[in-house]
Every structure is written in C-alpha cells, then in structure tokens.
Length: 93
Image 1: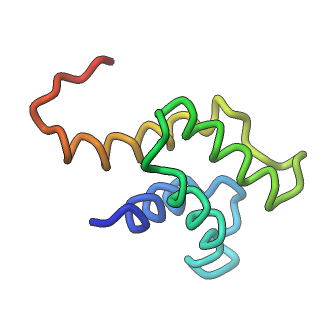
Image 2 (image 1 turned 180 degrees about the vertical axis):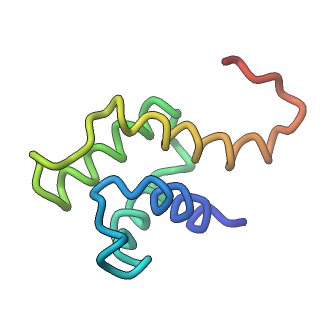
C-alpha cells in the first residue's frame, strides 16, 4: 500500500470533520495530499501537528480537532508506513 492510500484510509476512518456520511470518500483528498507530501521528513509528533495545521487551514478553526485528537491518527499512519519498512524494530510504546 502506498503512502497516499495509507493516509486516506486512516483519515477517512477517522473522519475528523464528520463529513463522510454526507459527501464522497474523496472529501479529504486535498488535505491527504498535503499530509503525504510531508511524510518523508517527519516524526509522529510532527505529523500530528501537521494534520492539525492542514485541517485548520482547510476548514474553520473552531471545528478542527485538537492536536491531541490528531495524535492517534498520526500514530496509525506512522506505524503503517514505518513498521512495514523496519519490521524487526521493537515497538517503544
């Protein structure tokens, strides 16, 4: 699975703006593309900040999930991408 597909799966499962019951599954495509473009140089903590910032820029800031609410999705994305690349590493959590 490529990075775009991983991010799309996690973001759509989370549905941070609660829009997917009313729109297409491509609703978050611009946000997903922006997140994917930053993946190669990012830690899981920074990924949570990026997710928060991207949704803050694209949607009204009063509706955006907090960084703490972004962290579980950031961790899922990071684990799906990097645990596959380093399968013999022990998990630190």
